[in-house]
Length: 309
Ligand code: GLU
Image (cartoon, rainbow, N blue to C red; front, side):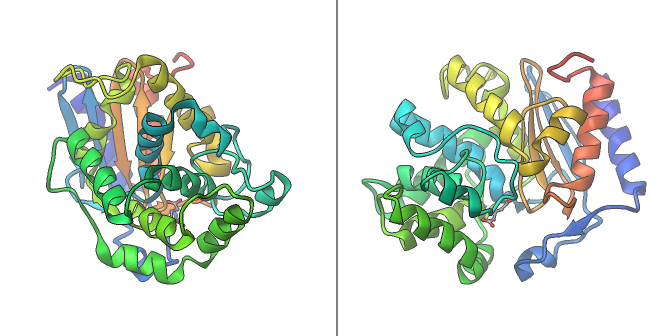
């Protein structure tokens, strides 16, 4: 058994014993029903070995983690022109905040808050029907994870659509500034559906490998993005990946990471590993409570923080 296998097993055991697990998202019934006791961890190292423990093969709603992959696709499509429609500064605000948008004339702070991710989705949608844009996003995830079975949870998407008044407000507000090109309902439809993709920790960690290895899948050698682009996506994950908990995540874990309200976190140890953790209970900033604690333990024991041990 490798050191990594041992550490991953230990951490899963420790997390099982935690009583303070945070609160499961309750804004839609599909997420509120998820077992708060679930915990999964998967780490894929540079050689492609997977260390996995707990519920690492149980699919969960990736929610905002999808924003890393839509950002990657939109940069591929628009290149640096994307930055005319969205900024790249931490927001210091909750994920669905509207106040900043007014002060900043409809340009969202970064691609990982909801407004920014909706603007990014609009870029992917332009020139396509919503169904085609969504198919492109889903196929991208399937190819990266090397698993054609990855699917959208339609019940989650329908619930998001039914209750997404705040996201609709953000989208309409941006539309009024000309930041969105497509009909608001089309852009929102694609956004809600890509947030509703269901994946396991193993699939997600596999999909994130290109970010840990200069834009390439080190096993197949396939280049997904340039090394420079991978570095920049990691920079945005580090500074903006956890909403107004991004500073705390950098302080405690020290890796680029992106959280989702479903309780997942994708974290990247550059040159070393791609990591996915899932524990549905959230902290006050809407990030996985135990997920963060598990990642802190992992980076400490493996010496993986980008800031040194
Ligand atoms: N679908 C969620 C929303 O737009 C994503 C939020 C998140 O994962 O943080 O409200």
